[in-house]
Length: 499
Image (cartoon, rainbow, N blue to C red; front, side, top):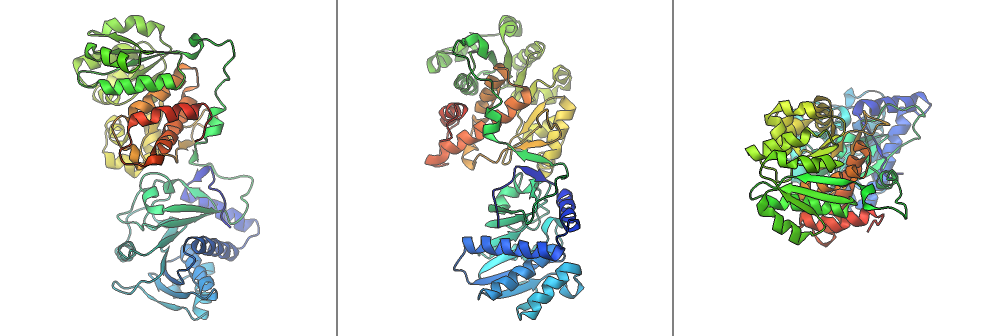
């Protein structure tokens, strides 16, 4: 039966390697297929117990075998079952052929798919599985289009057909399932890019205990208790000087709100002292909103020198703009050689002037969204989204820094204990697609960095707390969610409250 979703996320190739290891360890391929069908049947019954009708789409290979065995099981339970195939079942081999023979021997109606054929009940996508790496072929694409247009409930076998298991990329078209039951190992592509929009509810079925030696994971799901535990405890005799002096630079003309959000969030995230360098026009509003913040107006970059010399960490970018003032302030800040978070226009300025990047190092945290990442990499946003894991690795290598690529299934660079293993954030919701959310994230990152957390840990903890705070704030609904609504939930989460 399915269990909790695992933290380790694998590639399709690694999953096939694990499947082969289980078979080599004494579990037959047909037995694994039978267990997969059992898991599908239990998950399907739990979701649609009274449906009574099942229509299964089968392709070739083991994914189709799972579909044939599921159909056989549903028929034995008294459901009305039909199967459409897109690969001639007489050409199936091995365990998949055995599965087809069982379904055919039970008298299930099995026929070739053609557009316009009737669809009923719960639809089962057993077409492609993890095998796809490019575009979906025309005949399969037509079947997927019919499934998506049916308005019937859909369960995907292992992963929705058309979805790349490693990247979450869509090969032209993909099944939109309400339920996906995935086997043996969790696949990274289920949880990032287009994956979440196509998977629906995710259920994991291990099928068997994995061997002790497993392939390297592509990523791990971020764990809040584990990350919170890496913060040092606060002594009773503590004072503000022990929790860092964070300096934020930004807020060009007409863009003061961003730096205000970041500064207030930083204080709520535990920084001992928070200072802001900004345009003079923003000083009164900032002090009125948050009198605990120290604010200094700057017209020339050299005026930042005194505060840069006293700070422990920097946040550069919220509302920074791309003016001459912005560029000179960024250049001055980068020259200080401090741990720093670069966001928003700080990233756009570096993309436009790559010479600034020579001042970055492993203590630098970058927080781009896909369009900013594309500018930094000199490619298109679509190319970034087509392979988000590769984009994170490329940014980290090119700029020698820690990176989070924001978006559904945000991906971060790895921890020092596993630098090649990305971190993935499952939290967050569409209500967070609104202005100022990145500024709040920068404030959390900066506060944690100023308090002395290792840069990679600070980044992962900030990303997860920010997303979880968004979920807490959205308990009253996603529509109308404001970035400032996250600030108090951020504080609660950092203090160990989960609700």
